[in-house]
Image (cartoon, rainbow, N blue to C red; front, side):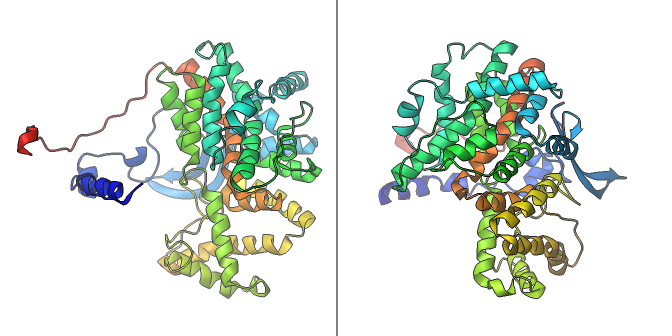
Length: 452
């Protein structure tokens, strides 16, 4: 953009940017549910779902009472689901995807068949990798993933067929191919933008989703069992989080217009790409790097030094000056985020294997001191706990995964939930989502060009 163009845009956008009609008084006067939220911060009820349920507090006589967090997939608590497949020594993402898609836990034979279907669909269509990914790389992997999904439409002879069985086929194909798309987009980006060697490995039909992904992004194709188990758990925990989260709601909104599956999923990817939705764990990692630059490793166990840093963050004197301790607190969860509890357990095991114990203990110290920092800063207690983003970035770093893959991995897990919400809208929708907006623009007369 030239200086003249920049000046042109700034000059002519002034009226839009400085409009007096967007003020708190107007929002209150017209009872606008900003962000589809009620005045107490809870979400406006706009639909029904059987897929995911998020519980974080109890409302008693209009008072919010903190409670232990619960996350359910199709009515099954996430901690019970995880305990089940871990007790059997199995990977859980494939079982989780089946549960979300079909509303039930699969018997052994059905799970085996579903895994075979996923394994057979991991390879991308002929020439797709060369023509659509390697020849048109992107500096942002989420952007490349969205473009790849849209291009997938051209390779599907029944792209516009919205019968239930065909939409199931499309969504299962996307669940299977997402890890491959992300891995190849990552390799293309590293080769074209970072001048690294290009490694394109073929996915294996016999491996789990997490094993395949680690194999595809690593030059050596090597990984340990624990590494694959930890990544598998992360995918399970990111697979679904209720119909009201931004990207799931996007899938419902776009699907309600009766568009094709690829357009709907691409829109959800665009939603997740935003830093307010899918990029929070990167913010956590950057904040922790800032902390480590100010507090030497020899003082990581000094509560006073860590607490002083957190207080500076809250006072907007440290890190990005937003006053936010990233990874602490959640819009719904209060006492605990069940995803963080489960991931933290595996993170500790991985830290021991990788020699990251001191780093892990630093995270635990921040988690422990953050509520006290809130109290010291605000003068009142607030029930907050670590959310899943607090530990997921650390887990990915310990796995040697680049920060630019953090949000794409989120998408690799969340496509299972998106697929379920797409199916729910196709089967039980029937009305286009169309909320109202109040116009606050003043009435004006048209002025002929010669008189302006």
